[in-house]
Structure formats: C-alpha cells, structure tokens
Image (cartoon, rainbow, N blue to C red):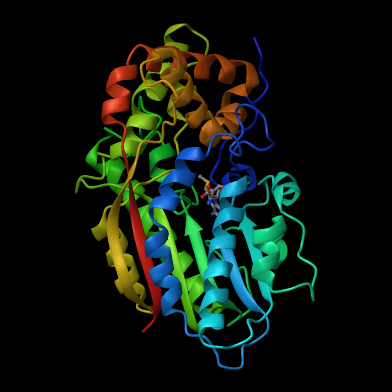
Length: 387
Ligand SMILES: C[S@@+](CC[C@H](N)C(=O)[O-])C[C@H]1O[C@@H](n2cnc3c(N)ncnc32)[C@H](O)[C@@H]1O
C-alpha cells in the first residue's frame, strides 16, 4: 500500500500552492492533452478579435503594448493566443499608418505551473531591424514580443497600476480559489458526503460552490480594474452551463461527476481508501451560468459588459476513431487526468491515482458511445472594458 499523499491534505490554504495542470510533455501532460481547448479557442477567435477591435490605440504608441494571459498553463495554446492578439493589434496599427510599438507578453499562472516547459516551447525572439515583426513571424516562426512569466493567483493583484492593454484568460476562471469550507466540514449541512464534485449535490452544497465562485470572480475583477489601462480591454472565457441549477454542471458534471465519481467509489468498495478519504476530496471547479457571471460584473461596477454570452464549445474529447471505444475511454481518462491528476496524486498518492484513472478509463470505455453523444462543453465568454 502506498501511503504517499496521505499526509498531503488538500486544505484550502494549500490549494493555490499545489494546483497545476499536469506539467512536462509526457502522455498525460496538459501540453499533450489540450487539443480540445485549442479547438474551442479557435472557434471563438472572432469574439476575441471583436474585443481587440475595442482596444483604443494611441496615435503615438505607448511603449510597450502589454498583453497578459492569465491561467496560461504550459503548452502551445497560450503561445498561439498571444500570437493572435499581437498580430491583430499590429495590423490595426499598420492600418492606421502608425508604426507598431514594442510588445510585452506576460504569461501568468499559479507558482506550481510548469513555466519551464512553457518557456522551452516559446519561439525565439525575432531580430530587430530585419523587416517588420510580422514578416519575421510568418517567415521563420519567431515571436515579435518580449516574454516573461508571472507566478501568482489571478484572484489577487499581479501587475502595476494602469500597465496592461489587453487581458486574456481562457478555460481558467472556473477554477475556484479553494473548495468552499462548508463543503469540507463534516458538521456542516453543506458537507459533500459521498461526492467528489458539486454535480448532483444537494442545493445547499451547490450554493456554497456558487457563493465561492462569485466571491472569487469579484476578487478577480477588483484586482484587474486598477491594472488595466483606461484604453484597454479584457477577454474572458471559462467553463459555463446552460442550466439554472448549479448542481447541474453540464459538461463539467459529466467529466467529474460520473465515471470519475464512480472510480472513487470503486476504490472505496475495494477497501483501498476509506469513504472519509473520498469525501474529503472535492474538485474545486464551478461552471457558472450567464446570470451567475453577470451578477458579479454588475455588482463590481468597474467594467462595462461589451459582450457576455454562452458559447457552445463542443466536446473535450478529441479522438481519431470515434468508433473505437477504447480510444474514447482513454481520451476521457487522460483529459480528466491532465487537469485534475495533480490534485488526485496529492490526495491519495501516485499508485492509487494510477488505479483510479485506469478505472475511469475502463468505465468510460464501456460508455463510449453515450460519452461522444452527450459530452459537450459550454463556455461563458465575456468581453469587458471601462465604461
Ligand atoms: C485548463 S488550464 C487553461 C490553460 C490555457 N489557458 C489554455 O487555453 O489551454 C487552467 C489554468 O488555470 C490556472 N489557474 C487556476 N486557478 C488559478 C488562479 N487562482 N490563478 C492563476 N491561475 C490559475 C491553472 O493552474 C491552469 O494552468
């Protein structure tokens, strides 16, 4: 029996020191399992570009023009998006007949994010004086911006006042700063007994998650509003849901509330972990409704809502042979593991975590057809600027 992880309590204080997507470039890494996010991001590019068109450009460009990706993780998605943003803004400057300024891109995530892998994936900086930055990028896959990593929680201040032109964040804001305390407290009526996620939980548990999400989003907006330039814009995408009921988490519910949940129950039934051990694990994710999101932006009052909608993103499963049940099962398990594996490892240790994800794979394989039919992600897309 492997006890590694038994002493690592995923307490609320530790979550932001611990949370990360699976680092590196291996089979279970986020870098290798984020094609679905890449596809969903590409399908929303027109909305991102609308946001970028709202950024006011200075006729004598301030130097540098600053772009920030919050919750960048490690992998090519963040590099791709930053590139899209900078190319689009460059084109807008050129269309106005203004020489584009220098660009700074800040890649920001929690301290345990694998920034090393991300930095290794960054293309080299284009040489100055050898044609326009855009020509360099197109020609030899160079980047046209200075890059830096910024470790820290986006629920607090990260940048100096009035220093950022464009904030971008994709598929990150549904991660809570902590599991709600009441959900972890055995004496509380909101204790999430028997479950590892909010999906299908009692109303009181679901409301505790909703309250946490709204308090976190309020902290996020409070932190960004002094940081963004008056002329800037912000583009936010996070998992969302279409149901009004917070205990119906839609795609996130299917991902963490069915086969993943059943796999935890398998470990309990096999006597490998106690039911208390299972019950003290909760996925700190909340997929908000449009209304949940809107209420917070309006209550904060610093930002005008230029766009706020629920966007159908599609399936998180990317498979080459949809009829191959084993491939579908593997895709679900690796997708789940690349985002939640680090938390599971810390809670029950590597060996039991391996077993748990094998169970997820086995169960998902036997429900492959319905998973492909039913697993859909919806996203909340918000474009905000100063009123
Ligand atoms: C699913 S990944 C999204 C990665 C990337 N944006 C993409 O489009 O592929 C979510 C990221 O949000 C980060 N994250 C979660 N909570 C955070 C917080 N409080 N502050 C900063 N980053 C956070 C996680 O560490 C993770 O890297």
